[in-house]
Image (cartoon, rainbow, N blue to C red):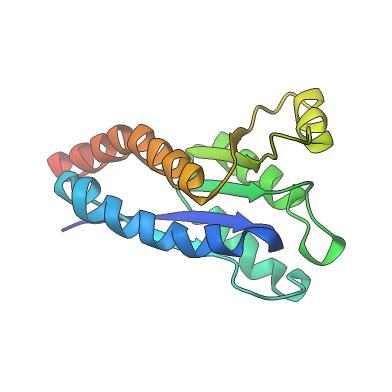
Length: 165
C-alpha cells in the first residue's frame, strides 16, 4: 500500500507550460523512485481559471491537506484575481503546525538572464530565497531535485507508519 501525499503546485499565468509539465515530472518520479519507497505523490494544481477568489476556501483546504507546496512565479505574487502571497504564507504556517502534513514549501522564480527581476530583490528583502529557473528544462530539474530531497523523510514516515501498524 502506498502512502499518498499531495504536492500543491501553484503557477502564475505565464507558467502554464510548467504547470502541465509538473504532472509529467511527478508521474515519472513516482514510477522511478517514490513508489518503490512506499510513497505516491499526488499532484494538485490550480487549473486555468482567471479568478481564484471564488475558490479560495477550497484552495486553502487543499493547501492544508498537502505535504509540500511549490509556488512557481514569474514577476510577482500575481494580480488580485490570482495572487499567491497569502497562499504561500498559509503553506508556511501549515509547515509550522505539527498536526498538519505540510513539510516543505518552495518558491521557484523564472528569471530572464538579460533582465534582473525586481521581484527577486523583493523576495530577498523579505528573507525568502527562491530557486531560479530560466526555462521548462530547468523547471523540471528543480522539481526533481525538490522531490528527491523530500522523498527520504516522506519514505521514513511511511516506514515508521507501517512498522507501528
